[in-house]
Length: 201
Image 1 (cartoon, rainbow, N blue to C red):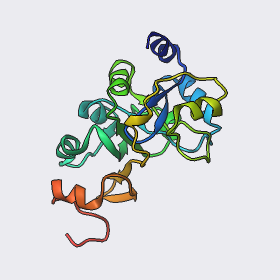
Image 2 (image 1 turned 120 degrees about the horizontal axis):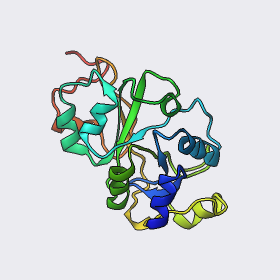
Image 3 (image 1 turned 45 degrees about the horizontal axis):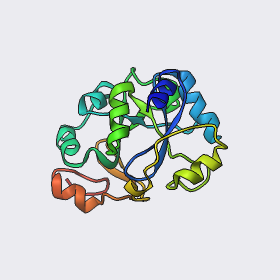
């Protein structure tokens, strides 16, 4: 862990478990760290990154025009397999969200990863795989794919292998951009006031 912390502090990238798949994490506010993740994954630079944060306060610090029910949503589902897209404010570096008007937020539930986010965050953490390949769920395979260029925390058994649900709250109506572990029904059970695109008010 000391080595992982030193790498994050120095602007490097490490492989960490979430609750879904492994992520390739680096400090979001450090341009060198973000570029390192892009380079390792061979990820197109116009493909935006999410911010991994540890609290609702962190989410509010990097967004604007949040829906009134955001705190309730956070309490009900986070930490957990949910990515929330909000309107980005001026605190979000262009190298994180590719200059878009929105930014995604994740709060992974793995205790080691969440602790590192609290210490060094916000962090970016796209799936730990080469761009275009299946998201990584086997630590040893990830190490092989990256040719030993990164280190990380191994915990294959914690992962479900199912991607997070992506919920877009940047507009007047909610949209599910990717169906994952949390369903529309799960969301509505906790937040009946949630209005999805195309529904009558």
